[in-house]
Image (tube, rainbow, N blue to C red; front, side, top):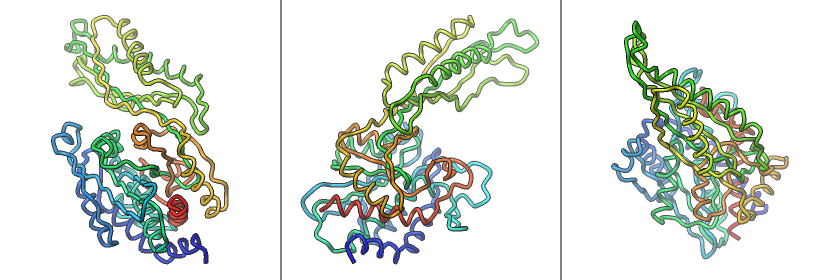
Length: 407
């Protein structure tokens, strides 16, 4: 048996154990918001200790977490040193959006049916807590001479932008890897992704009794004028095309709106939040300036209103990198061998924490356990699930790739 076959055999022999590990992780909620995620980190560290992995617990100060709008964050780093050489870090995030409605399986039950494990974060991205942990365990089972180190980064701020997750670890110089592999899906290696700008727009008018509306200024009508202008701008974005495979064009979404006090009152204030996805070719400062100008111009068409604009998030795009070739080549080689089909590189319209490693100069790629598309996994929707055979095979691909990188 060669080394790759030995890795595969170890993963097969321990796969039921890997599934139980993932079930235990899914069963501890990490709804964000509210973002009380330290308990999950504690449980993860406890489970890792059972494998002989000591997880460093890096608690983000309460004041920083609260100011960010969350409750608790403890990020974990596991360091496994085998000799001199490069360090490969593996990052997955444990925070996730709340389950929402429409589930036919308990969101935190981690139930298995027809070869699928159901539960919030089963696919994105607690699955790769399991993929990466068991890939490292398989690697160490070889007892082979390796050159370099592996780090596991299990972090808890992806939904709010990553600054208190990987961003916090990098800012405090707690890690400086040579390569970074981050949670993803099994049928492509993602090497670029969109950026994201999120903004909160507050439209102020003047409240009045609905029986005498002329005495007020309708903030909602003013907001509608602004929204019409933003949606018209969104149509223009469809004429812009990215050169990165897997990424189409920029787009804008208004995901939340609230305002008014009662049915019989002219609304004096309306607040809405927008999300603007930026392709890798765009410049974030120019994108933000354009949106602010569109809003200002539209506001002028409705006299009497005033508008406040607050930036909530600016996540830069991950652009294709030359330095990640050894990592990408290994994943593609072993992905094709294990899955029996070519594993292409592509971009993704999502934004991820990987950009933070990229901004720190760390060559990175995205690959892990999951289907061909986000939609297939039901991520961020009811009945999120993971096909367990994808978990098994992705663990083999990652273990084999680590073996190559540490030769």
